[in-house]
Image (cartoon, rainbow, N blue to C red; front, side, top):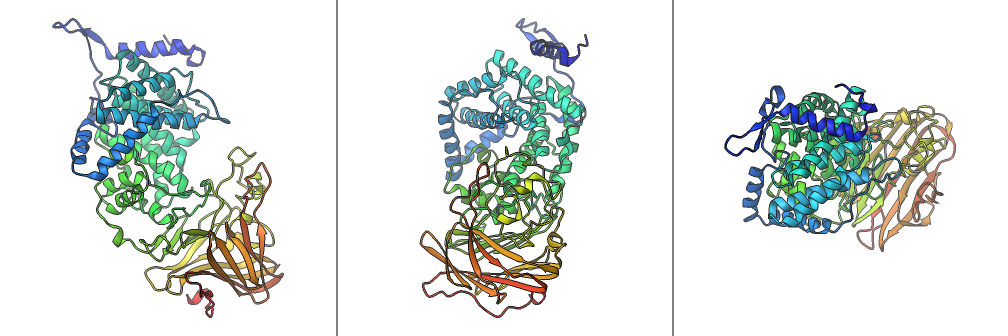
Length: 633
């Protein structure tokens, strides 16, 4: 019978899928017990190496036993497992997940289910305590009774498919059989079936180069592998499409591991890179060469260097306000894949002050104390490129600066070429405001200069620590690149050419940032060759209270700590202070200020230079050495 799928009631489709699965598998009686014996399909091709027994996704029983044994002598691992179990104890008492859309999606529900299933199923497998099994089954029963997993916003389907697949696989041998059948049927109907429809209609995310790719392809991949021994047709359809699709996104890590959508989306995309590839390896013993793309072996360094001593990240693109790095659990997986202790040790360092999650245990790698070998300065090349420098890895008050180049039309990008952020004395002095509310009208409309996206303060150039020429934001189609950089020297520096951002005003525009005075201060030096008479507005966004001591000197204060800003050039300019306050529905930015310099309209060569000197001692007066042109750096 071939009924048009869209015309069938969901309960009929569910029944048909159950019957098809039963007919496909085949049954006959066991002569010894008279119980039905399921004859599984013969697996061929890429599925010929499938580990048929459950659990096979990410955490096999063999790996679980290895971890349990290791935990008897490894206190870190023991503590991490205890952290997950403690969270599972809280999850038991949480209210049932509801099929409620927030805005246009229910992604928060899918993510909540994912977190609960990992916690509860792990806690059950680690302890054998039936209360965790019962709670996990209860959550699965609820979400598998949903009418759908919100296919119009396919991230929701992908994450819920991932969640339910892990519950089905990890608890397969202990779950009530009736519930297990329900879970499998819903996994197929609400997840994999929707995935097949999406692939058949050439869903835009399938070959995207950014985060939706990894989330959707990996989520479906995990779901298909969960039921591959009984329903291989889904894996046979999804596996090649997901593998091909993932290759597009994984190229985005090249050449040095930067993720152009910013540190927040690095975490999201790399999480799902890890989930999908780990599932392939554990279920099929093969990651199909997907770990070999340039930059993937280096991307674990990005969260290490992109976070300052305050823990705040270089907050470019649509990262959340005051985003902190925390413990990036993809780094634990990356450490194992590329045999790199730098990655796993960074996770361990972060977990010293926070709770671990299940992934930190699944991909656990013992501590190797590699911090002493970390470089103070780091350059990341690529279409979005970054430069970082710091004075120390062990001093929480250390000086740190992050500096960005790239292209403005990168996914989730802002008009912020040349933006920088700065930490010192345990304070973030120069900051980025981060993303605004995604539900703002036309928030993602930024393909042209006139797009509504660029009217939002947090997304245009007026809120960032970048120059603004002629009172207008940077050109949307502009790219920039580092033309020189130096690491491991007394005064490390980087220089960005961002002429394209200002091409209607200048034939040349460059910004250099250097650590000076024995890595105790920062120099920001901008050089322009203006092709038409125009003004330059130099701005730095800060949470500090700003006091203008004189036209060329400002004192910034946060929590009793102070920083001196000196205006070194041009001689005709002065400091001023502006508020970053905006009106609803945009974020208000209450308490945020802008240290400003506004030049008079001019043409030809213009040099704008500012030094930022934390007041390490009460006698600090600020850096004011003779300036050398960027060409001489």
